[in-house]
Figure 1: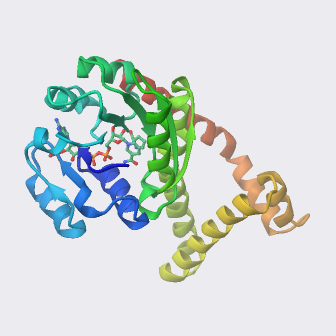
Figure 2: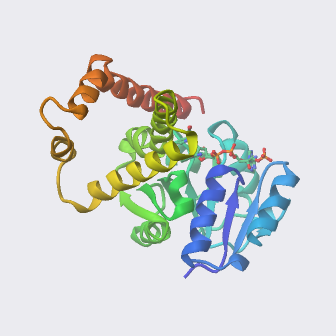
Length: 271
Ligand SMILES: NC(=O)C1=CN([C@@H]2O[C@H](COP(=O)(O)OP(=O)(O)OC[C@H]3O[C@@H](n4cnc5c(N)ncnc54)[C@H](OP(=O)(O)O)[C@@H]3O)[C@@H](O)[C@H]2O)C=CC1
Ligand SMILES: O=C(O)[C@@H]1CCC=N1
């Protein structure tokens, strides 16, 4: 039972997670505390928008929290974790959503035996649709893992992975929504170039993505089969997919994931 949850970092990811948590009813607003480095306007905005508790004092934010979620950029994580380490106690669970940075590194910044779990959610948390991967780190037992899985399961799906897979996970599902949005931007531009008005294009494309996602989830069919079902020989889809193939679609996606994964590794090595 979580009586208090503290967020260290108040940016996009923290807001997405807390929105999902509040909407799901997993925790009420009175139990959620948040702080950041210096942006008081941002804290005031979050307090206004979600009626959660904000505090410029990081230690007060963390004290008594059952779960502390660290959601700062990789280059800020040492300073952020060091600034709260004094008041962390072994009955608290620290969950890091920081890209690239290992639980061993986080643990070394804490400097004492505090349970650490690493998670890689995505911003679809805000809509209760994150695909989150979770890995157990130092001093975290089965119960800590269960707590993290329960938390992220309320804002989407949550799956345990080995920590060595976290770079790949980050490249696929952490960054993944951005690739989809980039595809949508490209489709919107192509639709407008083809004569559709922006609003009609947006509506059609959004529902097309939602519908395809739903089919992937519920039809029990492989994506290749779902694609085949749309592709009439000599028809429009075949012409479109052949153009994608001619322009190295598969290679572009492979380079995309490889670059994101390599960047995750680099971020972790800069510590
Ligand atoms: N955005 C995403 O889609 C995802 C992000 N992540 C990971 O989540 C983390 C946060 O990303 P995101 O939310 O996008 O980043 P943002 O830049 O939006 O937010 C970062 C937050 O960290 C705060 N911060 C910086 N230094 C400290 C400190 N010393 N003490 C307390 N707070 C501090 C900032 O405060 P201030 O503004 O005052 O400087 C800010 O509120 C990153 O590590 C990222 O890899 C993981 C999955 C998906
Ligand atoms: O771009 C980033 O580094 C973070 C990690 C996953 C999504 N956003």
